[in-house]
Length: 258
Image (cartoon, rainbow, N blue to C red; front, side, top):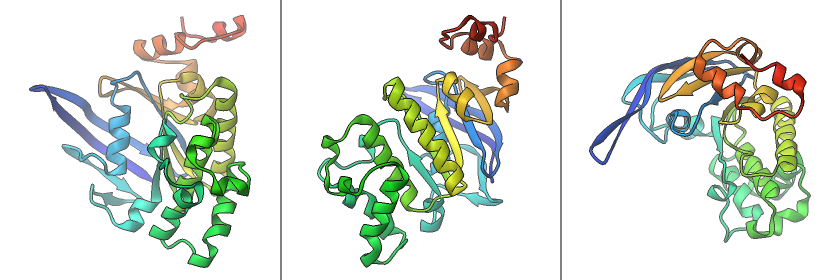
């Protein structure tokens, strides 16, 4: 579905050249839940921004369903790949009701007729477990988990094929995080979506992703099926990341690489 071929990206920060990405190659197949993991500064968010067309790569290309994706994209191409950010307030306008926020992509992409917008917004809210009464509310009246659910509903409004989720649960407490992750898995199956899940949290990856790449200083350290990478990591960097996963039971500790 998505092919990343020899992508590289440099930034100049205070006259210093920073190689954010170096020769990245990967293939994301339809219906994958594909995790990109690594510490802060590893390049994972830069890679996501290139896939979204926010940044232009210095070298390499991106193919979506065998067609090249450029930074300047058609309205149709933009609707197919949507973004859910760590901070939902990056998506939600504090001065607009939830109805206005979710209805905007419906209007931009002509998803439904004007007289069907309210019903469509109600439907989208129901997908993320929120009642119709949320339509008239403003973001500052919502909890963190509710804001993220609205952000997910807004991303779904354009009827995408791919969702890029950048640390979508890291700002939430553990119980709410679990609920949002379960919601995302349910939505993925219901809408036949492909997920690109960006996170530093390997415990989340282990529970949600079928494939994973581990990034370090702009390079791919390791890649493969999630189960294989966790059970038999090849890279010392990956081993250290897995060892750092918090555990409760001795049985869980025993599964960590030595």
